[in-house]
Length: 105
Image (cartoon, rainbow, N blue to C red; front, side, top):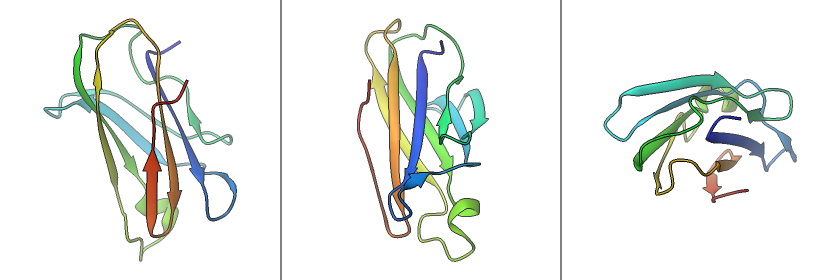
């Protein structure tokens, strides 16, 4: 399993958000991996099984999913990995005018 995984839920529609492009990179912008949410709203394989401790970023291309008038055409979440061998699940809860996140399990 990839060290970092994500899950996008459309809280307005009450279902997983499918087809959202997700980019995983270092905080400095160096690409690590990319993917697209599946029918369950998940990206299960985002790069390596281990990473150096440090800051990383997930960038969600929400504009195509939310439509041309999307208030948030992109959501960038920066987070810190302290243990480069522990699994990190970073969900995104999305609606047309708000989003939230947390460290999942």
